[in-house]
Structure formats: C-alpha cells, structure tokens
Image (tube, rainbow, N blue to C red; front, side):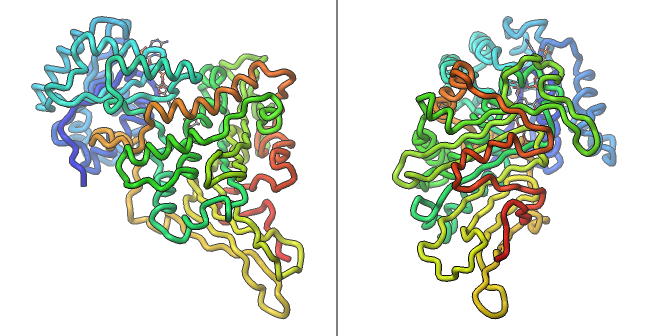
Length: 509
Ligand SMILES: NC(=O)C1=CN([C@@H]2O[C@H](COP(=O)(O)OP(=O)(O)OC[C@H]3O[C@@H](n4cnc5c(N)ncnc54)[C@H](OP(=O)(O)O)[C@@H]3O)[C@@H](O)[C@H]2O)C=CC1
Ligand SMILES: O=C1O[C@H](COP(=O)(O)O)[C@@H](O)[C@H](O)[C@H]1O
C-alpha cells in the first residue's frame, strides 16, 4: 500500500458547486475509511466572504451532499472531520497578492504539523488557472524546497487546441509537468481502470484485439438528464467538448493503446498518447460530413411529463447551435487497427444513463450452420456504468434436431464483488494525487493530442457549409439518421439499463 504523507489541500473556488458536491464528500469518505494522512488540513479559498464556521456549515454540517452520510454519526466524529477544514477569503479577486494566503498556510502548517507538502486544487472557472498559478509563484508558494507542491486542474483543459496549448504553456511557467494533475473523473471509475486489467492481465482477449478479429468498436455514453442548471456553461461547450474530447477519448485511448511495458504512470501515459496520435484526423468537409452527426434535444413528453427542449433551457441561447448529441465515426491509423471503424456517441436526454464499450468481432469466415436469421458476430460488452460488468455474447446450439444457433451470454457483474468497497472516482483520484501517483491523470501531450482530433470537427460544425443540426425528442436514442454512420454495416446497440438485455437485434433463428 502506498503511503500518504502529511499534507495540506488548498482549494481555489471553494465556495463553488464542485467543492460541496464532489471534493468534500470524497474527502469525508477517505476520512471515514482512514485513508487521510494523520496530519491533514483543507483550506478553502475564494472571493466569497466566509468565516471558517460559515464554510464548515456550508460544506459539512448543512451540506445536502453529506446529509445522509453524517446523520447517524456521533457529534465528535463529525467535528473531528469538520475541524480539519478552514477558509481564507481572498478579498474579492483571485488576481491579488497571496502573501496573506501564504501566512495562513504557514499558520495552519504549524498548528496541524502538516509539513510543507501542499496540493493546490483549481476549482474555479478555467480562465483563472494561470492567474492563480502565477500568483502562487509570486508568493513563493510553488517552491519545493520544504515539501512537494502539486497542482490539480479541473476540466475543461482549454476550449480548442490553441487554448489548450496556451493553458499548458501558462501553467508550465510556474509548475513543472510532473507537478500538474489534470483530473478526468472517468479515469477514476473502477470499470474504466478495469479496461487495462481486462486487456493486459488475460491472455484470452489480447490475441483477438486487432483488425484480424474485430469488425468494429462502438462506444456509447448516454445521460437521461438534460443540461440541468448548467445551461450557461454547456451552451459554450456542447457534447463534443464536454464529454467527447476528454472522457470518451480517454476511454478510446485505453481501448486502442498498445500493451505498456509496465504499470507506471509514464509507461501507461506514453502508450495512451501514441494511441491518441494515431486517430485519423478528419480534414476535408466531405469526410467530416459523412462521419459526424450533431443534434439537439427538442421539447417532448417523457413518462407523461413535458420536457423542455435544449433551446428553452435556462442560460441557453434560443438560437443556439450547440450540440447535445454527437456521434462520430473514425479510424485509427496504425498496424493493429487499420480499417476498423470506431463509432462513438455521447448525448444528454437519452432513454437511460449508460456508458459502455462494445467490441464487435468479425463473423466466422466460413459459415457451416446456414439457417439464416441471426447476427452471428460475437460481442464483448464492457459496461462502465450502471450495472457495471462484462458480457460476452456467443452462439450456442438450440437443443433438438439440426443446428439451430441461439445467442447466449457469459456475464460478470461488479456487484458480485459486493464485499469490496468501490471508491467514488473523486475519492480515488484525490487519494492518488495525495500519494503522487499520476497514472489516472491526463498529461499535457494527451490533452493536446485529443484536441488535434476534435478541433477540425468543431471548426467544421461551426463554419462548414450547410452543416445540419438534427433534432431528437428527449427519451429516444438520438436523431433517426444516426444509424447512417454505419453505412449499412450495422447499427447502434440499444443499451438498456441491464447489461445483458439486448433488445436491439438479438434474434433467435
Ligand atoms: N461542478 C461540476 O460538477 C464540475 C465542475 N468542473 C470544473 O470544476 C471547476 C469548478 O466547478 P464549479 O464548482 O461547478 O464552478 P462554480 O461556477 O461553482 O465556480 C467555483 C467558484 O469560482 C468562483 N467564480 C465563479 N465564477 C467566477 C468568475 N467569473 N470570476 C471569478 N471567480 C469566479 C466562485 O467563487 P467566489 O465567487 O467565492 O470566488 C465559485 O464559487 C470549473 O472549472 C468546472 O469547469 C468539472 C467537472 C464537473
Ligand atoms: O464531466 C461531465 O460528466 C458528467 C457525467 O459524468 P458521469 O460520471 O455521471 O457519467 C456530465 O453530466 C457533465 O455534463 C460533464 O461535464
């Protein structure tokens, strides 16, 4: 087990949603699981005028996100967690002299004996990231002579390739790359990490994991919810920036990558970068037109209740051309994947919340059981969420005369490992950063490689001639034409809530 050294966590933007909803609950769980170091303090910092007590009330005692967790605890147990939490008012601006902040950090360090190890968490709008890093440097708070200094950065990592490079260059002026931890919460999901284990700790999958046996790869990320209260943010982002550039391309990189020589952070990250760089960038309008589909949800009725269309959501421009559905077909230019199409879609307001990877294997070259009627491809379904698990679909003989073939399932469910406590993604990632393990964090070149692929699609959608914005009713699997991407060579799997259900096209012949 890795050691977690004594340290302090300074959160910038601590008055915001992420701190209350994700960070403090993750720290609380780590505290309850006795995973926090003995000497540990959280210092929230932002422009809001709050006292330590106000902040503790907000993120602990009155927090809707901790309510259930603390309701049966003894008072001193809750207090001993809350007493680790402090707040520093930055005085109205993040671009200010951090000398008072430094003084507070020093005082807390003395009081709690946390050592000089400090993790800075940037949980503000990204426009402030460089400003904060620069002010930390001006106050001498990035120097590592009296303990390590790390910087956790929240997505989005840029808005385009150029802005991502600017952000990376801006942060590199004050922090070295090994000090920077770019968080992608999908990498914190157990099932995403299990992709590495499935591929590289078994000898039954890897020999088939290539163009000789795989026909195509399909990845779906769907949410039932719409943009909720984040219309203002989302309208400037859209599905491609919000989910595809980061979470989904991270998943793609784990599917595509070559076996790393070891499990160290750099060994894995080197292979992921190579994988992302091998995605074929779509350059001309015709290719972009044929291989990308965007759409927005329109007003409709779901379960008897009216649901607003995207353009009617709070904070969204009524003439918005921001996509809430994106489906992309692409190829990977390397020896392993030559000619294998990848189909990836992400959307809000789908029938169910699901993220899954489907590996479609090729049909046997020579069919000897010719009774027609069923798809004969084998499928490996890796369910990231919910009903997490792995499913293999294969053909079996129907008892009786002749050779009738039916599809059967071999399945594994994470829930069958119920005794093992599964950490929430933020818990796992925070603990990793506290221990200096960057394996599950995105490196600068990974982020830039992902943008290299995404940028031309965004530019085409913004400036291309006659680019269609399709509509889809909330509660359906996107616009009707989204199967056209498959060009007659299949269609999207219809993922239901349960992993094993395959209502899409499971036919018994
Ligand atoms: N919330 C989420 O689920 C997720 C968030 N993120 C990212 O994490 C970061 C934080 O998210 P979240 O907490 O939701 O963000 P918020 O919008 O809640 O902002 C966090 C804090 O930053 C300060 N702030 C907000 N806007 C401005 C501004 N224009 N100028 C200066 N300060 C400002 C505010 O604090 P004060 O005014 O007190 O200084 C606010 O409480 C963002 O980069 C977001 O993209 C990423 C994934 C998910
Ligand atoms: O990063 C984001 O992720 C969430 C979906 O995360 P999940 O863990 O619930 O799958 C998404 O709703 C949000 O728009 C996006 O910013």
